[in-house]
Image (cartoon, rainbow, N blue to C red; front, side):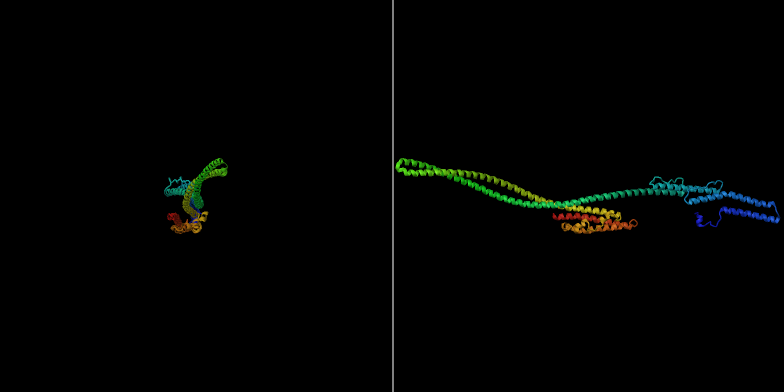
Amino acid sequence: MPYSSKTGVSRHTPFLRQQLLLECGIFTLITTILAGWVTYQHGMELSVWLFPLCTLSFSIYVLARFRRTIDTIKSMKEVLRHSSEGQLHSRITHTAGLGELGKAAWELNEFLDLIEMYFKEVNTCFKLVSEGVFYRKALSAGLPGQFAESLEKVNAAIQAMEQNSQLISRNELASQLHTMNTHNLLRKLKLNQEDLVSISKEMDEVDQIAKSNRDGAESSLTVANQISSELAGMNSRVQEMADAAQALGVDSAAINTAVQFISDIADQTNLLALNAAIEAARAGESGRGFAVVADEVRKLAERTKNSTTEIDAIVSRFRNQVDVMVVETGTARTLTADVNVKMSDFRNRFSEFERDAETIIQRVTKTKDRSFGSLVKMDHIIFMQNAYMSVEMSGNCEEAKATGVDHHSCRLGRWYYEGTGKAIFGTTPSFGALETPHAAVHNLVHRATALSQQDWMGNVAVRDDMVRQLEAAEQASSQVIDLVNRMNEEKYERAA
């Protein structure tokens, strides 16, 4: 709708064509009325009506002559209307011979050319900008005044948009890399966490095995001491047997000497009986009784000789057996002495094994405590990573569930309140100080997650408060990790 129609400025004013037609008609009418009045007063004269006829002819000429001007003005109006509608391609033509109006139309055409050129430059630049092309700048050469200044500002805006686009691109890349890094980091940290959990369980089993080995070593050492004591008693008894066997050997030698002496006496008796029998035979009848006695004595000597021979054989066999016994008891004494030495060495080794088992238990316990400390650190690193993800996603993610637990329900909380934490570290000062920063970590993360669900993009105070909560949570988490380290150090400093 034209501006005049909308504002009503020329609503009751006739257009120029109508004004000219009205003025020419009135002028012709006036001359005609005057000619009629003169004719009425003075009679009919041809010269009187010549003037109205000339006036009519001149009016027709003026109307015909002014028609191009009116058409040009109409064309200017249409061109301006099209321009107001955003169509800048229309121009005013056939302006030759129109004088000032023609110059005005020409200036209007040039103005529209400038505007069209200006908007074409702007449209071309911004069309390319929308496609991500920023090297095409607006050409301000040939444009005067504010047109050139405006295009220079457009170029500055395009350069700013290029920098902003690069910044957005870098931010998108950084965001993608951050998301990728965070997911991969969380995945790897969770794998390390699982490894630490497995290591902690394995260390518990190793600790139990080491304690079982220590108990077995103590039991085996007790048995070895009993065996060593019994071997010492056995060695004493073997020594007594060896001494008894040697005494038997001495006694058997004495018996053998006595038997030899009896055998010699029997031989002499037999020889005397033989001499007595010879003498009795010489005596004749008077020596017969003595011969009988001598014969009996000879028989007795022979039996004695035979008995001593048998005794000698028995004593010889006995001596041989005693000699064998002496040798065997000596060998047994040597063997028991060797076994006793080896058993003593075995007992010493069991003592060393027991001490080594105790040392292993101490080191395994220390390693287990440190591995649990590492697990606590890993848990807090993962907890804070989940907290950042939860805040970034305004709590609408799986990570928010992991950070939604309180300080009693997490792994450290269960160990602290329900597990073996108090029994192992309850006497250390850092154990009691651990509760406050641990609870603060959970509470601060919960507040930051709640703030992330508000309009932090439009409210700087909310955003800054959210950042402060996370900074405080990081500080509290560092305190937790530091206290866990000090807790281990305090425990083993006291043990030392």
